[in-house]
Image 1 (cartoon, rainbow, N blue to C red):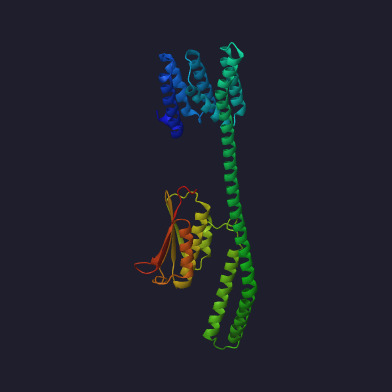
Image 2 (cartoon, rainbow, N blue to C red; image 1 turned 135 degrees about the vertical axis):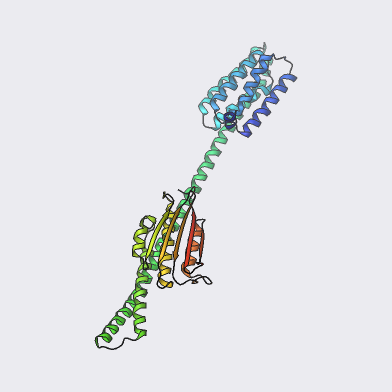
Length: 375
């Protein structure tokens, strides 16, 4: 029974029930007295309409056969032809036009010939032809309506395809423009900052070298300039690499986590919880970036600290946590740009981010990404 219910469409079921009720009422109210077998044939030919969209050709064959069988035993009223008309319409609408014509043409000829067979003079023949025009018109209307429906469905399908293509084109254009903008920004940064920072760094290095060569004390301000210029050069280079990189083609995922930790400016260890499994590409890249930014923040703000990176694989979530034992309390009141960027990245993927000082010092950054139905 459950399988039958899966095959039935609610609209088609209601349509079949309505046609069956009308056909039975027409048979009961008509001048003929159908037998039990006639009613059975009428019911089968009408109720089969419930499956018209599942098996249109089979439904047409059954409704046509039952209609002819009912006509052979009882002189039917016009309602008895409705199941066949609906089946012809359905077959035409789904594209089987040759089959619909092959069924309709003999039926129209049969209807005209049947009406003419009972006439003896020209006047009666004319009347019979006029009476035959009505059922012929119904079949022609079913064919035309089915063809119109088929063209409308084809038009709507083409419209959906064009809309999907337009959306895909817009996304590709947006990605291309974003890439071009990244490259433009990278060129501007390189042209406007790299040269100036390099000059500052070289001059600071020379000044420190000369001071030490002469045995003089190096001013703290000069050392600070040297360190700051070196750090600015390193950060600018990293920024340019990010702007020029294509995340789709570069290895920025948890598979490179060990390499990232080895290059980190602070001692760090990695712990994996759960069974690793494939991740969606955007989640994989985002998790990598979260660890990268968190370790960078530890190096900048935590002083002498060590970090622990924990990757937790769950059935429907990926947890990324970075704990450090450095100076606590930083960023708790006013989040920096790094934390804001991490939160935006995590939120865009439907996840959540927690960044707060630990209860016993240090700082914790934890991101949770949903991964179910995204792989």
